[in-house]
Image (cartoon, rainbow, N blue to C red; front, side):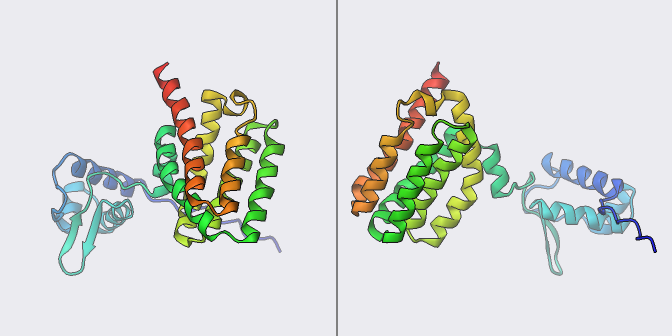
Length: 236
């Protein structure tokens, strides 16, 4: 007996997409400012020339984009004049320099905490990751970037703060792309005679020694050196 054909993905109808786009445009143009209550479904359906079910689906799409919110018994209200991007999307759109500014804020504090809280297992993981980074230094750029991020991830993990670890995990994909872009911009791995190994060794050694001030300083100097290269590139 033959198998039935696989079901394809369900897609919004063109009418729903058109209705949602019309509503998005009117909200963006200020016809309904933030806090305003939208007309009821019947009125919107009449104005748009569609059925109420189409309006309902269009409003659901706008709610998913963070532009409107339904209040029980009160109606649908505007909450934003443009779609609200989720965090991963915003990170992907961020400039490399902006990513590094935030990275510095996060990782300097992580290094300080790691120096205070690291365990023997944490130190072993950092030293193994440092060795992997050295081994990847002369290889493909993306492999070197992955090894670099993996080393920094061990430092963040050694801080033993689950929120900080989660932030770094969310940050990592954009950080990876920023580093790959950075290699294209300033050729970091080859511009430094030791591929940044001295700076990373200083960071690991400071964390292992329990020296929070030195660990934070090592992290800051390494990341700010990259920011200086970015600034010089932009000025040039």
